Amino acid sequence: MSRPASTRAATGPTRPEDERLPLGATFGYGFQHVLTMYGGIIAPPLIVGGAAGLTSAEIGTLIAACLFMGGLATILQTVGIRFFGSQLPLVQGVSFAGVSTMVAIVAGGGGIQAVLGAVLVASAIGFLITPFFAQIIRFFPPVVTGVVITTIGLTLMPVAANWAMGGDAEAPDYGSTSNIGLAFLTFAIVILLSKVGSGVVSRLSILIAIVAGTLIALALGMADFAGVGEGPVFAFPTPFAFGPPTFEVAAIVSMLIVILVTLTETTADIIAVGEIVGTKVDRKRIANGLRADMASSVVSPVFGSFTQSAFAQNVGLVAITGVKSRFVVSAGGVILVVLGLLPVLGRVVAAVPTPVLGGAGIVLFGSVAASGIRTLAKVDYANSMNLVIVAASISFGMIPIAKPDFYDQFPTWFGTIFHSGISSAALMAILLNILFNHIKAGTPENPSVFVKGTASKAVDDDQLDDLADDGVLNRSAGRRSAAADEPRDGAATP
Image 1 (tube, rainbow, N blue to C red):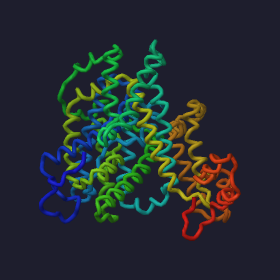
Image 2 (tube, rainbow, N blue to C red):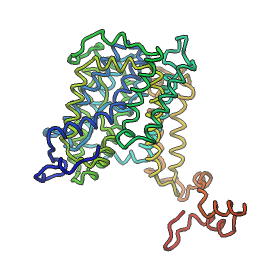
Image 3 (tube, rainbow, N blue to C red):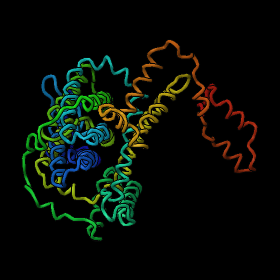
């Protein structure tokens, strides 16, 4: 949705983010923010609820709680009160960062109550350290956060594959061609909409594809919405609807790692949106934003939701539309709250055929991994051990994904932490980053053997032209390729 000039406020605000638009435009742009992040905010409760063995009605309640708390957190972050809220156009919601860890906690036997207990305690600790986080954020550079975000996407791929096969391994049609075919059709719709649609359609491709895939499933008799009417249409989220939280030390430690990563991501989002808006962002404003994040995350488990953090895709939407008003995002928060008061909507989402979710999930979860790869592209690998940090950390994080029973013989507390690929990768990346980049003693001055061994250069246009002309690579092209690492005056390094 582009921004017409007529919607601009007549009077210029002191800060760009304080601009107020007409009410209709405010809620119109706010609804666009909701649509942009809707697929992302409903995926975590679907995954965690499914892993915990919740019924469709219970998953619907979980989704409603996540929408409700995401809306309240967004309002707090954007409107702000004393010490809480960055007062920037940031949409809040359940972060993907904790999904794999929460699934590992569920798999460890703690159930959804142990997940909620871990989120509550870890978020409370996160809240206490927010004033000091600026001092420890140096331990979370792109080489660490890139590894974690990449691992998040990769660890979620088995979930997408399981959904594509039908979701229930005991069902007779699990892995059938009809299930996988429906998933592939949904996947194809996402890709086609991304290619041929307008800018708005492209950004909403996942949501539109889920709706289209569901309609196709209904026509084929592969969808059942009979249970949607069972339960109230409107209801306020019930405190401790899933029972009182339980507290397990290993689960809390594992979730605390997620909280540290979440704080880092939110800090980066606050800085990024501040640059996009063109407003001042200082340490106080970052601390206020992080406190809003953690306060919302502490309250979330009471109503059956999880950790709250800023949604990066909505930061991108601010850049695309040029609508910088924080009150537009506040309106999106109000819409999320209203949606959270409609548990019937959550039941509708929970009834969407899992192959449809699987097809969309392949793109959605893959985009998370791609975001991590983009972060890793910012890392300096020359004459450093950063490549070793990335290689070892991602490999370590993939162990419980490639071999889920790898830690079965270890103590339960150990398995709860390391069965999560995200926790495994994050711990390894943090420790190796400290070892190689903060503790300089013993690190060689030119530790580039790993870099040199894997630094393949792209074939340049001149070389392609030589091969196309006569099939022979000219000497000059070879010399240019060999000298690629040497900067030349007045020319860009290839």
